[in-house]
Amino acid sequence: MALVGIVMGSDSDMPVMAKAADILDKLGVSYEMTIISAHREPDVFFEYAKTAEEKGFKVIIAGAGMAAHLPGMCAAIFPMPVIGIPMHTTSLGGRDSLYSIVQMPTGIPVATVAINGGANAG
Image (cartoon, rainbow, N blue to C red; front, side):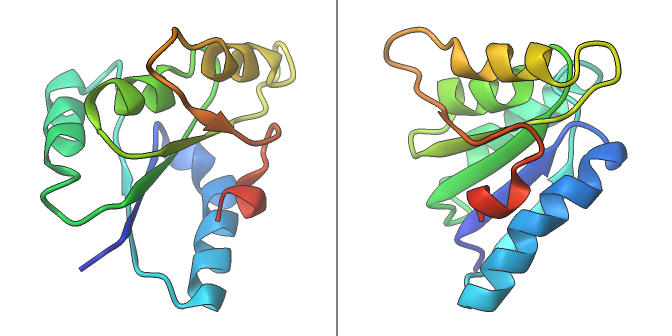
């Protein structure tokens, strides 16, 4: 049973998210990695987040770029810790995704690492 869910919004996020997986591998922590767009596949995303606790996840590591709603939406649904990884984007260098993840409302916290900081999330 996986203890950590690693979820990203696009396959282009894989190189950064793989760094988190590498750290978990070194620590012997089991994880499940998946690609789900909160914008393009909202029903699939909601099912993932609602069933994450049943799957045994103790934390979700979520990475996304631009609007970067994936980490915050995970935190709104999943009752355990969420670590957000903002992705570097060409238009704003990842600042847009960083601000989207950091500026969460009270009661819906997302721990956030640096832009493209996958290794620190693992």
